[in-house]
Image (cartoon, rainbow, N blue to C red; front, side, top):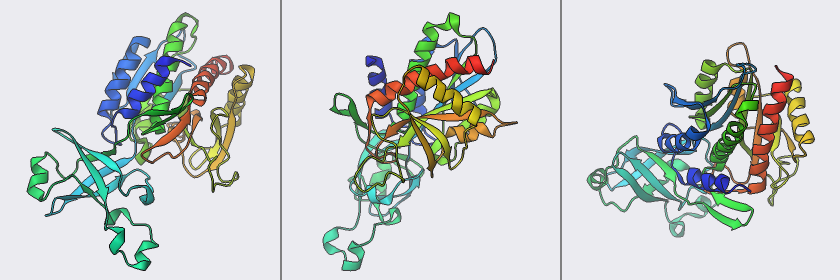
Length: 354
């Protein structure tokens, strides 16, 4: 296991980057990518693009991982000093109560806790219902709207979950925003490996940290339009359903069984030609893999696929439990194998699509 891979995952996971406010993550990723690419640049939208130039421009390959995470947005400050909020990205209301958060203000971070009406005074019918986000609030310890404003908080400030990376066991880690900081960490390892073998690289590879994936794949839309690759790969996460209460038919992907290759999801049906190439890459390199199909979500690959005249696109996904929550779990072996599979896929794509 690469020590740098784990260290980078920890740094990226601990950084705050709610969709639309990816600045901290982008700067971290810039520092990590810069030594291993010919050029790194930021486009007008805010995507970060690292370029490794091979002997030929084609087949032009784009590998993307999104930098943003789900979070919240301050939409009102009450007279009593509580923050009412909107959700940024898909968040289950059930996981919000009593969560520690940080408000990302222009003057720095302000810690808070998501509060609700105390359960002791709820009516019987209220106790049976999930408390909706609209009935929750963020408590920053203030007693008035004026005090909140003195703390530097204003309407429109973004709010992130506050949880630091840690190990459950040697190969299992917990952290915030593994969707998709795990992909970002993998992207850096892919860049390192390609850079070390640059003299053998036949194609030009674009390594892209995209923005605003969680709110509509927006960064991928502009980055792919500009680059217009021949083949696009998204490194993202896959829902690991190996927990109590989940039927295998609902979510068959499991931790420790290798990265998942997307056959079809809510936004993408992978080209059979490209899927065969990815499977061949995995099997020839003896990399464990799983096939994922029929999931309700989608990834940047869905946007890549329909850019301009179309781009052959697919997903290499890292099995992850509890995505879109404050604390996710993954196995480092799956992350490392996602890196290996991405590199094997790039090699195979150069052979098949030259």
